[in-house]
Length: 432
Image (tube, rainbow, N blue to C red; front, side):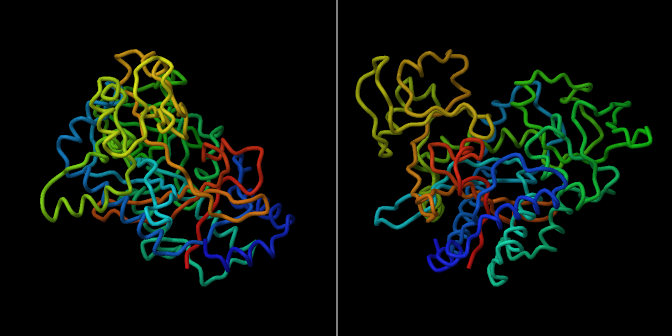
């Protein structure tokens, strides 16, 4: 979106350089990157990234200071995933933003979703550096946020993941990690921090401690867990853990599992509420809330109050309640799915009512956003979804550290939804 930088990049682009980029990523990640990597990064004004980072942080702080919200979110956690020893704050946070047209035609960020769960911090650092090395991105352009450089970024990752513990006693856990598409990130992180990547189903419980088996067959006690295991994947796969996840284990969590539920899509209907205070507090809230698209829980929508709330917020909703009524301006989203799984565009009334009443609390309806295509490519204008990645180490502050970008030209922005296209996929943002 910085026109001169885009023009220079496009004019100098060479296909063989893209193949060089993929080879370099495989070399530096020590494995093949299985999802699609875009042929180009994006070039943004730093003010745009800073405004997104500030909005995501402000929304998070509002949720953490909202007892009624936290009580409701706590109840949304499945009983067998309510883990003991929750930290006072999340260690990791991501906030995804679309770029849409504002009232005066200018671009403005709009929140897609917010999630207190780790993202691909390590892989993204490698990708940014690979773009720079292969395509000669000017050194004057930045890619890290929060005033950090590369060394400071990795120092904060290390502090957040390890806490006060030796790398030998810290593990990154995931479901079947060697077969996850995020394996490049796991391997980069393990190399930089000196920790082990372990399948969550291979942890060993001895008394009140969890252990992993090292290369010599010895059981090594785990003092801190960098959690990358997603609850909905464990549920979908029917994973049977060899230990009780809800028991009080003598272990610290870097990214406590409960935060996956406590700050998630569950927050979107709450964040779109119209009034939360008085005076200065209300004014500050209104300024931040303007980035949040209207949303309502499915049950509230079908009962009527959610429908009225969305319509009063400007969502275009048709009259009538027949099964054939189509809500073109809405998305149906499962609350705790990952990577865009289960999202339905333009649901009908009949499809909504077909969801059993006891499951409606697991869904929300959100105003569909029209991403503005802003990235000029040889295949036409492409749209970008921008994710701000934050770290919050023990004893530290919530800090934006890096961004990632997903480029696409379809309804869905995830890299899995843009397979058979070019100049789309996983990308990076450089700021001026």
